[in-house]
Structure formats: structure tokens, C-alpha cells
Image (cartoon, rainbow, N blue to C red):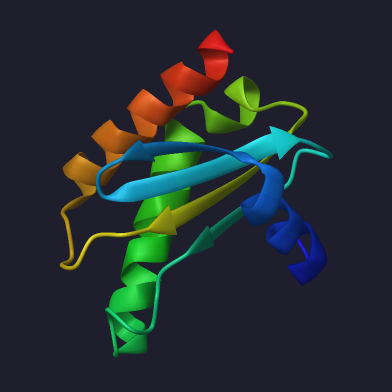
Length: 101
């Protein structure tokens, strides 16, 4: 997803909050993106670790099938590094919410 689509998504999309994730989505081309703020995680190693965990949880949890035709952007709002199981549980809840819509 490019910057213009992400900004549009953040302004006009619907929001689902499942700690430690905030998920914005709207009808679109089926784009997907993740973000971890540099303000909370100064070291790139930590940010990349969290982004890998979010992408893997999305892929394994059936996110691409549940969000067909939706632009989805996942933003990590937690202040500390959560383990994969916690992220996977949050993503599963989000996927269930998206599938129900």
C-alpha cells in the first residue's frame, strides 16, 4: 500500500481495537500493511520483530481470506514487546470481526 492509500484508510476507515493492535479497514483493493512506531521502539530489531509477528499471525490466521476486498492496516499500540501467542490471539479476534462484517 502506498502512503496516499494508508492516509485515506486512517482518516475514513473503520477501526477495531484488540490490544496490542489497532486495525483500520475499509473497502478497497485488498491491500495490507503493518506499522510499529519508532517512538515506542527505538531499535529497528524490535520493530522488525513485531512486524514479522503481525504478518505471520495475519497469514496463518486466515486474514487474507477474511479481508478479501478490504484494505487493512495494522498498527501496534503496545508499549512493550508481546509474545507471538498474544499477537496471534489479537489477530484472530480481528479476523473474526472482519469475517462477521
